[in-house]
Image (cartoon, rainbow, N blue to C red; front, side, top):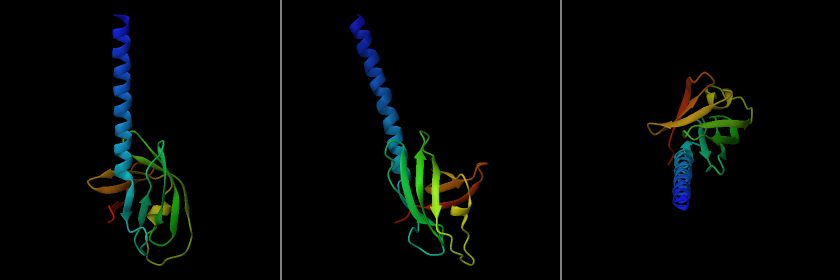
Length: 130
């Protein structure tokens, strides 16, 4: 009887771990990829790498300057942008919200990668690249 309970507990724990890993993988694959125009001028875009162990990297442009850095993937599928580095060229008429907003987080909503500031206000969004 004791072995049956231990086996049942072990199976339940394995199933829970598998569901957690599947949820993280789904969030990672949903966020990873090309968003906006990563190599373009005048419009922002990012190339987001797959998360490994809950963290990943990105690179792209804010529409004027090259940007790169890391991100943390959370269980709910959101990401937190960390350690963004950027060149600092002046570009007339380009809204550089992507590099100028501190403490960005993002989530995929309705096919767009939506970026939020510290107060959870939407500051911009990118559509899935081709």
